[in-house]
Length: 476
Image (cartoon, rainbow, N blue to C red; front, side, top):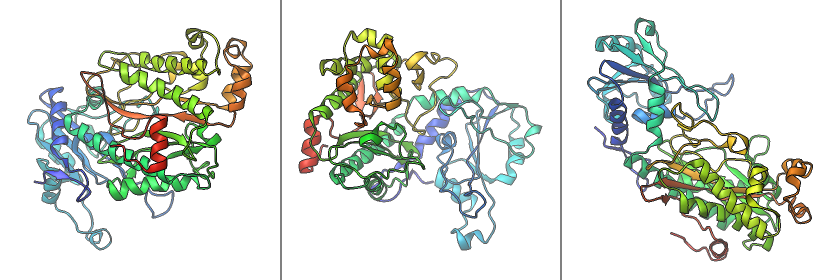
């Protein structure tokens, strides 16, 4: 059987033992007589055409077997720990248009599973295993509000099906990464970091945001083997940097970068299904103005506070507030804010300048699962309601740390009209930042027993950024 998967020489070889270990971890949490059945993703056409979107596998399915083809099912017999892959029975003319037809033995060797059958044999094979119960996956994604796709097949009504047990178990297992998963994430974060550094060297006034995006995409794919990115690239400059999810179809990174703009570029590659999510903010012309430096270093102070304090047992909500306090204190020293920092937080000033949460779990989904499972702390109220988790940190969690400071007209106007908030702003100075956009600094980190391992390798201080943009310094 194949031992690894990769995109070829020079790219990371992912051991298939990664997926076998995930299956063992899952079986350890289940009972003899149970049979896990997962359904993979399907091809999706562009509306009514014969053109399909580039296929991406469902992430729960990837986690358990790493299979990349659409239209598959997977079963795990908890009693024997044997793995069963079910693939589409394709017509002979598939070979004319799409490539060599693979046999069941071929798939068995490619994915290192115990048995491979065709999907039309699924019911028969499962019946032969005589399970007491089928465990299917169904549960809410607390970021999207959507429900995980439950396996359905002809004849499933002949089995006793439990669609409640599996979801919280497998979601919690995904929160804690194995050493093999961590190596993949180190790789994709390093590739994405290098791509960001290439963008910083390319970006300059007069270029379009999407041209910078193309440099990132090129490096991730050409050098790192990342066919996909993990989300739509956000390439804001100047005022577009204040649009938190800029880059969508109605605003596709088309602005021309101007001299004096701050760039906010949020982009992450994807390798073997695992996501990176990195944001770099820097001046388009390579030199910080005093105003740019003030905002940038306020955000950097927030990031540094979390890097210092994050460790197992610490609440993510406390880390969010630690970052906010550091940022607000720096802005107060810079003359943009007045008053007591704790009073600012009590009145929601942190939610005006940073309306999003500190970060999120990271893994096979860029906003990874497990944020608000039944055993976890519930979603907070107020500005902290936007946090994607309120959990205490655990060793081998991977997360983003992404504080930001934005000058969003609607939020500033609301604050100016609210006496309880308006009193904390030095409006003579703050109003001069309208059109500034924003700054976000986003690192991908691993929680270790000792604290934090940062997977992100990009210039971060003002001096590092200016040196890199001037001299192409290679920060290892």
